[in-house]
Amino acid sequence: MNILRIIEKKRDRQELTKEEIEFFIKGYVKEEIADYQAAALVMAIYLNGMTKEETTNLTMAMANSGEILDLSRLGEIIVDKHSTGGVGDKVSICLLPLVASLGVPVAKMSGRGLGFTGGTVDKLKSIPGYKTEVDINTFIENVENIGISIISQTMNLAPADKKLYALRDSISCVGSIPLIASSIMSKKIASGADKIVLDVTVGHGAFMKNIQYAKILANEMIEIGKLANRETVAILTNMNEPLGYAVGNNLEVIEAVKFLRGEMPEDLKEVVIELGAYMIKLAGLGNNVEENKTKMLENIANGKAFEKLLQMVEHQGGDSAYLKDLDKLPKAKYVEPLVASKDGFIYEINAEDVGKIACEMGAGRIKKEDDIDYTVGIKLCKKVCDKVLKGETLAYIYANDIEKLQNAKISLQNIIKIDKNEIKKEETIFGICE
Ligand code: URA
View (spheres, rainbow, N blue to C red):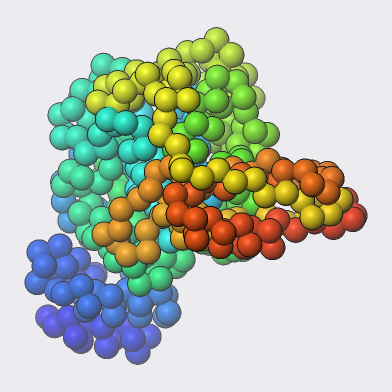
């Protein structure tokens, strides 16, 4: 078999066989296929798509590119969660300690930032000392002992996805249904989940810009889940404006900590509570979704969810003192307010544009080897539909570079759109696919 022939086939819109897909994945992981050849094939997939069968074969080849974790020794149903990506998406940091505090075992492998979207791994790494790279035994022991561990893709789990994820990010090939579906499902299958709850984001700040495409992506992942014997539920959530108020790594950790202490932005609360209610249901710990939501709110109010976050951080080498006293976390050199130029109502805050500004300030990567600046980002003070008065603060920009700060300020002024008329609030949850 020959990689050039495989690239030509996909370039010419022909269907790849299971053997050709496996040849590509094995060769790429072994470094027998060069990055530039993989980039050409990925671009061809991005442009020409894949059949459902090709996507399933790609997913299984990626899942089988390393070890497949067997978590059966834990003797419980492991339910994993994954998002298709968003801006201000700190859901995992709020949700996973919360469901773990209710007895749902959490063994999660998260990703780093991708394109204009943030990644849980980068956010967790902004907590001083937190190690996302741990060995398999520590990962399993933490789940066994405290019920939760969140790690990065550092062990030999779906190494093909790790390579392709970084490659796609650096060649602008992220927003493709077969590439997203195979990336997510290969990781979930390899990391040993029995059941999976997916947050399929929709809107400006998501890779799926409309509900129609989001449903196709959700259904493809549900189908792959069925074939791999992993029950999967997908929740379609609104990502037109950033989720919550903070965008940027340690700014989002701060928001997540406050969330677990009871200070919950409405949209973030809806997403976390909906996903969690289904995680509890799939774990077999409560069939009634509404009752599950009540239990979750109770564990926020009584502090158990926040305690679980502290425990998780400590077990992964992090210093929980920074979370107990958020003022201790490192801060950006410049914090500048942006004020409203007129009275009115906010009618749009395009999440993709906000994500791009945060990325340009250093919260995300332009090249795959770029370092992240954990302290920079944007803290919005208003959400879409809010009333504003001229001179009122719309957002704070956190930067370490004066030129980047000024550029961000100019861009953000145009992104937060104000009109004299009030608009109707959109739904946060668009639907559930099972
Ligand atoms: N999350 C992933 O893990 N992979 C994608 O491709 C997109 C979001």
